[in-house]
Image (cartoon, rainbow, N blue to C red):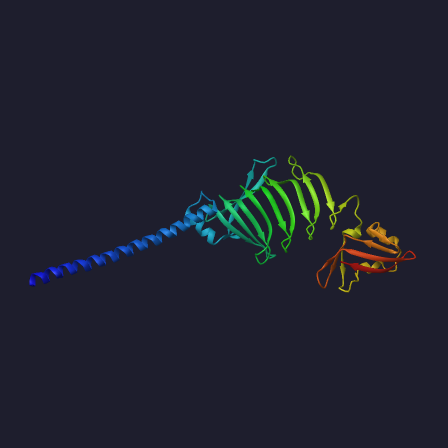
Length: 294
């Protein structure tokens, strides 16, 4: 009986020791998995950044906290790969050519987001309106030079312009838009002589082509005081009707003594609404009344 108890005691001790060893092993394995997960996250960040030339720790840090470009130093370098020599900036951080993400805060409240590789702007470049929600400008850089399609937007998100760059120079069609989304101007730029305009077309707010000299009244932004009477347009009341053709050209519509001009820009200063049409009533060669229509 004594011998059995001794054997049982030794067996229980072995079981307890084995149990404790298993728990200790599990704790070690668990710690190893956590370390591996952190390293995996850093490697994934490196792939997303597309910066194979940088070490994983540096890229991961830049991805979390972009560097303020105003804290960097730079040198100017000549880029002789283009038709006309370009000067690019090479940025340094901690005395090394910087690779990663940078930001630039401007006095007007806009913020620029910049991707860099070996000190050069390389990749996506964006400018955000104050508040950071709406993009104002977007283009891509390759080795410090703009390449590809560039876009700009109004503060409300409406497209403002679209153009194309090759090695830092704007080429081909360059289109700008009115705030209402209609095409404003289209320029076609030379692909051989940077900046040379080959042809151009302009359009009014309704999309109608503008030919020859545009009357000043059609280009000016008028204002209305909110009671359907334009302050500036009221200047014409009581004056000879010939002044209307001088300011606006021939009427778009003429019904008896009513002259209609459309495609104007008339802003209601109370509501911010943009109105397009002015109606002049002409009696005996004199402007008798002025009205603004939507």
